[in-house]
Structures are given as C-alpha cells and as structure tokens.
Image (cartoon, rainbow, N blue to C red):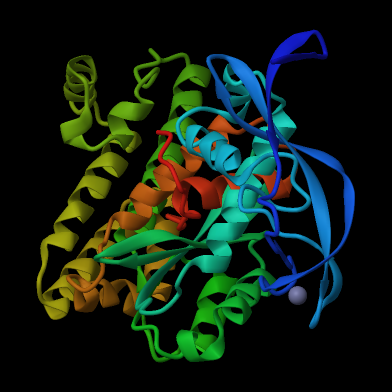
Length: 395
Ligand SMILES: [Zn+2]
C-alpha cells in the first residue's frame, strides 16, 4: 500500500520468473532478451475501494522475425494504461450504466471508461464471425438532435439479431460503404434485405444484393402512417383554435398514434370521446387503424386487393398527408407485398425492437459529441460482440 496523488493505492510488483523468456509482441513467439525499459504501471480492478496497480519493468526481445520488440504481457496491451481485465470490467458496467456513472462509481475518468469500451469493442469486431448472415435490416437514425443521420445495418435472422454496421450519414455513399465492408460474396448470398423507403438505400440494395428478396418492413409503413395522422391532427388543431372552436384535439396526440392495446385508461376515454366528433383527425385515425387488417393476410394476392381498396378510399378522403402516403405506397407496392413472401423467414418486428434499443443508447449517451463515441457505444450495446477470455471471473 502506498500513497499516490493523495490517495492510498495498492501496488503489486511483478517480476518475471528467473530464466523465463519474454514473448515478442509482434509474433507471440519467445525471444532472447534484448534490454529492459522503464517501469510501467497497469491499473487493475479496484480492491476494497483502493486502486490497484501492477508495477512491472517491461523487457524488450530481440526477435528472429520481428527484430527488437517490446515484450507481450498477459494482463495488458503494450499501449494501454489499464489491464485488459479492468477494461473488460469497466466495459461490462458500461452496458448497464452511462459512461459517466461508471467513471464516478469506479473513481476513474470518463476518458478511461471510453478507452476501455473502445478496446473491448475493437477486440470484439476483430474476433466476431460474419458467416451465415442471411437477413439484414437497413435503417436510418437521427442523432445529435436530429441534425445528422446514421445508417445502421442489423442482422435479423431468426436465431441471430445484432448490429452489424454503423455509418455516418444516410447517403448512397454510406450504404455503399457497408456493402464494401461486408464484401461481394457475402452480399451476393443474402436472402432477405429489409429497409425503409429511403431512395439511396433502395437503389444500392437492388444493385449490390439484387438476388435478395427486398422487403419494406411493416414497422416503416406503420411509422409513415402514424406520421401522416399526426400531421393531420396538428394542422386541424391549429385550424380549430384559429376558428375559435373548442380545442378538442389538445393532448390527443398519443391517443391517435399508440396501438389500442397500449393506451392508458385515461387515453382510452379520451379516444372514445374524440371518435364521436366528425373530425379529419378521426377519419385519418380510422384509415390508419383499417390498414392493420392488411397485415393479417396470408396470400399476397388478397393482401394486394385489400391494399388497392384501401388506397382508393384514402385518395377520396381529401386528407393531404394521407394521400401522400398512398403515393409512396403505390410506388413501392412490390416491395411492400414482399413482406408476405418473407413473412416467416426472418424475425419481423425485430428492426423495431433494435431501433428502440438503439434510440435508448443514443439518448443515454447524449453527452457524446463525436461520432466515434456514438459508434463505439452502439457496437457495445447492440453488437453482441465476443469478449476476450479472462483467467478469472470477477463478476
Ligand atoms: Zn516476433
């Protein structure tokens, strides 16, 4: 136990076994000793609230294949101040808490927590397997208060769902970068690709994974419908106030957007009352609800008929935002109907689940100014990455 920066710390001095050969950090083979470097400190998991440091004099080896190299030590990496075990320990806490909370709890800096998570993520990315990916989902997410976008690609196979890739922006170049990373042979054997209607995605997916069944997932279409209903409601609400009517649409946003089974009791009452009015918002809401019937079809043929009828009704509704949705639906009809062909092959709805989790992560990490932090946090929480094996389980 010694004192350092006004706190007691535990120092563990490590010396190599006599006659032991140092391991070359270049090729992992033992080599002849060349010389010794200065003493280094490696931070380990704290014990009873005390910081723990390994103190070790690093040797250099004269390696036959690599030349003079620093030795490799089992508890850490030549450049990092933290031991691998400690980094893994911090990273596992960063799964549950924000990075700030982790740094507070372990009396360390935010930068060290970041560096720990970054190390674990890089290790995981290097060691993960990308074989047997048959279904992927491509999506865009707003971040930094909606000023910027990220493109995310998930694996959405039934037995394996995880984040595969994150890229800055949502341009054609972004999605091309994904396919470049994924490689032409893997891309060429994909069976299902799910995406939203964002044009650059649709275009590049068709070009680079044309053999796959391209599906516009239910989640994206429902989201588009909800947005249209909300637009109708917001416009009508303003109009009612401007015309001096009772603002019956006040605080009704979620009643109209949520699924019926998710409404609170109070919202249910509000909705019931609202449905008695002859309002544009109510008509839009009912059209959106009717669309749910579409997904119950088994046969693509009957589903298409239902869709056509629904579209005709909406076009007569005089609800501009809803009519806009119909235009988009008509333009993408084959991709929407592909949903019925793929219905059981990939885990539908999984994109929605992953997206919810992703948004939680971006929100939890709103302190992240840089793209790099965001990227690391997303891989960490959603990538299901492998971790280095530890000699001892600490948690
Ligand atoms: Zn070597």
